[in-house]
Length: 120
Image 1 (tube, rainbow, N blue to C red):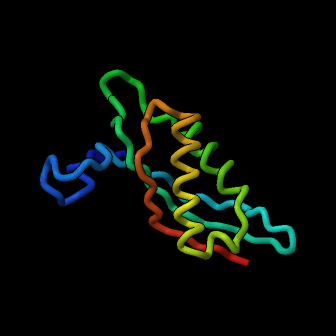
Image 2 (spheres, rainbow, N blue to C red):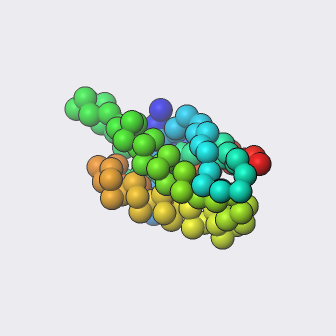
């Protein structure tokens, strides 16, 4: 599901240079890369994007590609780094870079964690 900026925010139109739309993704549950113990990450992620999907053209959001890229990045992380604010910020930056490299058609500008749980 996606929302335009006006639908996703109470800000007046034209306020700020944020994303033009928000794409809501289903939750992710991923095994983390910790070697000494089994750890999991459960995260819900919304994407702030430059280009809203165009329902009229029939070109929707490439959800399979987006989810594949996100899972690939999440699975490389260690629990210890994800427990810090700097680790979460670095993860956001890496997700934006990976998504813009592999799925450039949506133009990801921001990542919003709406749920984030590391389980050991």
